[in-house]
Length: 503
Image (cartoon, rainbow, N blue to C red; front, side, top):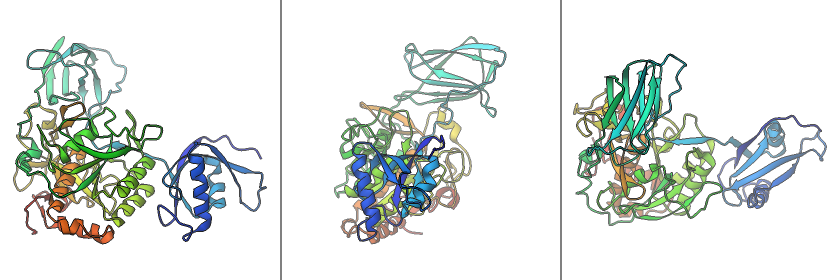
């Protein structure tokens, strides 16, 4: 029988009711998934017999098995789209979920190469980005908008001397954004008259600077945790950094070495890890916590939902108490939802970032009903005046009018908590430090404070690992939350406070 020439895509196979089926649940499905597990070990093609009554048995369905979560658990397969209906009727009892990809929930909406229309070049400008000693800063991203609303302008990355030449269609930059990967605060300025050259000096990071995280949580004075609390960080990997001790973890990226769970070089996971558990020259909110690093992001690419599912499964196996997911995308994902439920049933609570789409609805997995969804807030005067963070100030303001919900933070009725996520200083790979913004930063601030609060109740942590444990953890956290005046769409119940009383 001649097959249509449709492209092959990756799909996830998942049992109907559970993430890991048994022979008692459905012997046929259990045997089928076990057979596919054996093929996954070699990423081999299997020919599955079509069981549609009007087709010949010789009309096999070719399937490549790419990966597996346990013998009788989820499978990642590649199959032609034109075979999907045939597969569904031939092998019922399985959910078929498209492989999707997630981005870190760090806020860098201006950190893009702007695609501009072909217009007459009126201004050529050479931008030099330098430190206070006049030395050029390489690899800094420079973005000049001549029309911010229309996303017109030019951008690029500075060379080894800290310079870059840009061609623009206007002589006034409506907005300038400059981002350094680490060691410096970013830069933001409006309505700048451009000449042939433009010199911009970045402010170095100082570890004694009181950013918004340290304003609300004086991490230098918080005692090191004595009670064991384990937090799984599903991200780009964590470390190396002298302020971070990583207990263990796993690299879940298909085709990469499982034992390489350090940062993939992008720094996001290390920054998240430092907010939670750094201890040394810079402290996080839960110094002394056990950090488990689950790497799901290949360098320069999004994270597969299948790899995230694998990571949650590993966190369950490793008996984490909390999971931090500073990642997201817009659509609900049935596969990840199933594993969040499995984690909750194993007594583990997942924290997830709301997303950074400029007050859009709460993204997934934060909008999952079993996740703790965290928005990002900031505070005036906790970042330099000309820093990128100054562009994130937007109403509503809190009971204390110096507090604001970040302009980039997603909001909505699914929001459970808010936490500092504007201008956060934290660890960066290879013993460096960086400033980042986003619900990516707010999420670990909340998860870290949750770990600190839970460490004060060892009896709760010693409960059997089931749904009741997760329920009691959430209820215990709820009495340590303080509303700060933004309203429920922006802050949910409020901000976690170690000694806050229930209102």
